[in-house]
Image (tube, rainbow, N blue to C red; front, side, top):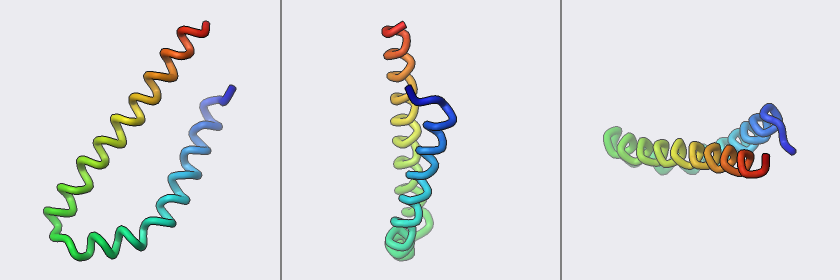
Length: 68
């Protein structure tokens, strides 16, 4: 079973790799946007990311409580 620190380190590894891979492309894309449009694009995506992470954590707790 994966421990907490291992999960966090794997998540941070993938996050860093994705940031390196997408930063140039997204930077060029958002350079053409106004500041308001860029913020209105990024904030909902950030909120969806937070909701997805919360759903994963809740599902993990539910699975663990059903197993034990």
